[in-house]
Amino acid sequence: MLREQHRALKRILIISDLSLIAIAFFIGYFLRGKVYDLNIGNVQKVFKLSFYMGLLPVLLLIWGGLLSYFGMYKSSGIRNIPDALYIVLETTVLGFVLFGSYIFIFRMQEDVSRLFMGFTFIIGAFLICSEKIFLRYLFVFLSKKGTNFKGVLIAFRSILVIGTGKRARKFLEIINRNPDWCIKVIGLVDINQEKIGEVISSYKVIGTFDDIPKIIHTNVVDEVVFIVPRAWLSKIETIMHFCEDEGLNVHLAVDLFELKFSKARQTDIGSFPLLTFESLHAEIEYVFIKRLFDFAISGIALLLLSPLFLFIAVAIKTTSQDSIFFKQERSSVYGRKFTFYKFRTMVVDAEARLNDLLKYNEMTGPVFKMTNDPRVTSIGKWLRKYSLDELPQLWNVFKGDMSLVGPRPPLLSEVEKYDNWQRRKLSMRPGITCLWQVSGRNEIADFNEWMKLDLEYIDNWSLWLDFKILLRTIPVVFFGKGAK
Image (cartoon, rainbow, N blue to C red):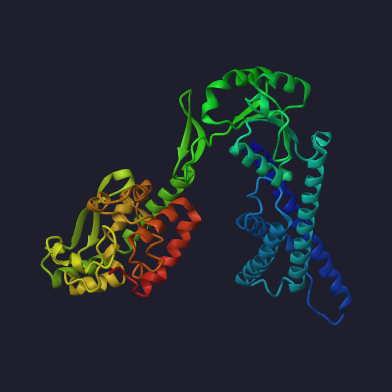
């Protein structure tokens, strides 16, 4: 219902905000010139507008990018005034720093007036704050007037809600908290005759299923929203057919099951419609970009680090007669198996000696962690300290078995001991580094805490989160906060 409106409104707001910044740019230039005219003793040259015009695209990119990054356009309507003002403040401060850094990097500090920058950012912040306050009050005012103002900036819609239960009440409370969505509820409908006249969340029950044709014909109804229990699904098909014949848009609430984190979306296979409940909230194009990034970076890294690979291989071979690489079968997405590579850091019979060391395990759950593990070789301790033993996994990333960032791939024997909620870790491609590794992995002894960090990563995954984890991995490796 709101998605199309949000997209259109977002475009309008972005264009409006950038237009205001452009206005602030020209006002800033004009005021700087006026100050120069009054300050006779100042011999600084004021460059022509044509020189400054080269900075306008940079200024617009900084303002537009920061406003979007700080969430100005994430809401389905107009931001609350305190939220909007805070976002503008964040954008102004950081934007000034970034714009100043751009000027400094390109050695333009002698040519671009600091007064111009100050005027531009202060005026830009003032104009956008004024716009957000004005729009908020305008939308609240128009929403109270309802359909009399239909077509002003955005279409106001009258909806009929079918259902009066707990989910319907929650829906109405959301509508009440967001008057800028421009939705007017004309009333509720219930299957029970005795409900007529009852007031729910300030809206009256105006009829039963049999009254729906009359309600639609005697009121302005743009859309019908069904928020009904599962037991009613077999009883609403006739009503939906009627609404279809009337040309009305019909919405069916799909929160029919109290799922913890899965989100529903409509899709289809061929012409067969499906309602999909997704546990992994990742847009396919971003997953594709992640894979391209993994492929490119791992390929480049393998080439650039090949001398280091050779040095480590020689070091391992000269201190031990065992094989250079350690290979092990690990679990990937939804239980797929793959061969996992590391530089060998343990003696060759390490697996056979594990049972004798289980009593020294410092980690709860199915994972084994031990400080000063006697199976680790002398060169292995150094490799582990700086995580150099993990470098062969770049080949796993290049092949597509792993990603640069993702939950660490578990042993098959560990997966067999997972609780059901822990198996959700397998819903994403495993990685070389993850939240656990940059969150003090040596100090985390609770396996459940480790799993929660992995699930936190999965639930909040984005390309930006991957980038931040990669940045946080650098000091972890550099300062030798390696694995036990």
